[in-house]
Length: 262
Image (cartoon, rainbow, N blue to C red):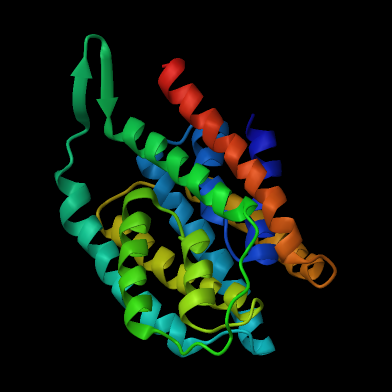
């Protein structure tokens, strides 16, 4: 299973390179089911893996002129605030065992995986659906961007996701970006949110398997390099629904495994 986990880890970078999102959505399940990492710890690993990979990808897009710094910072600043709110206050007060029903315990790890699965399903639906045409004459709505950034930070703090599947449509509708810019700019935001979240977990004393973490990160970066090269030949808009179906199947699998086979 570990070898299969290493093989599928390349999809993390591929998704970030091709469509600018989706890396976090599959990182946590890979860590939990193929490497037997506890869900709470897997969210920390995911923040590092996706953060480093997205940072490298965002640098490439910056050189190509596909990264809008102002929109990214307006989105990222409130996102970081809400992320720290979850990390410092909300998540720390949640008990490990939330509820016991007969012999079935609803634990924090169980809640993370089930909520994560529903987020995956919601994300997959947004990927599968055809994107509406964007009115390029609209002005950038910075207040709305800031509000959405705050909400995305809550998701990142709780689930350890990069939030790219929420960031991309927000940037398309409220930041007046082209499709290429809406792929490059989220990578910058994801890298900021993910790495700050990772450092927060690190200060909180989360223990890490550095060897596993660095190997998967290296494989994800390889996937990113391949994905960015393929993006020149493959239309990301056409690839996104295919990736959406993959994410949907994984979400259904997680719910089935966590609820029916505990």
